Length: 231
Ligand code: 6PG
Image (cartoon, rainbow, N blue to C red; front, top):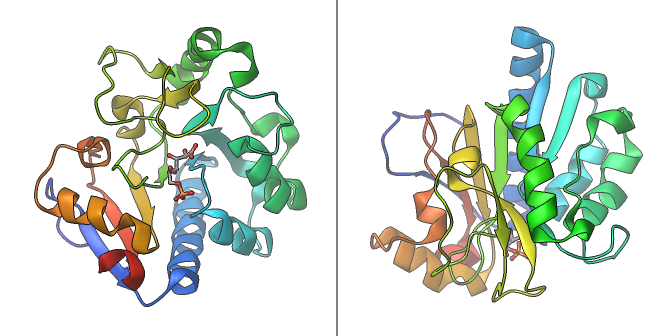
């Protein structure tokens, strides 16, 4: 995937279907990891939750990589018991992380089972030491949310990690990296797939200040979108 000029506007990369999008995302992750490990002997990635990235995670489970140098963080987590099947970290572990040789001590789940405030406070310490990330993966909800940053929610801008209450997407209590923390990455990929995202994409493109639109990175943002989401 060619990186074009860096401007505030996201760079849109179009794919015919979810499979092609997932393959491009997996390849971009592996490329960025190789570059980061060559440069600093370490690769710090923030993973997206939800369903969209799952296929890319499954592809990464089949890939060859210097997994011992990977450090895994999460962009957000749902305040559910640690082993709840609806936890983002559990999905990622089951389709990918438990199938490759990433040292368990290099995977940093958000302890969302502690509740929003306690988990956000603890994770902020971890994130502070990890910035800047090499790569941040994000999805986008049908209302233009990303991670657990939802329209109409106000958060202290200086926070690295937010406690989230009354989220419109269940569960209502969550923990989310802030736009500032997510935007600190050398590379940001936002994966958008499926007809359900068309309206949010249209609003995003028309300049609406959606949470996803507020994510900015020093090298810009790359959006990987499939035909169904493009409309
Ligand atoms: C979550 C995710 C959330 C997700 C979007 C898109 O906890 O659900 O962090 O931000 O990325 O809601 O979800 P889908 O990929 O399932 O459409």
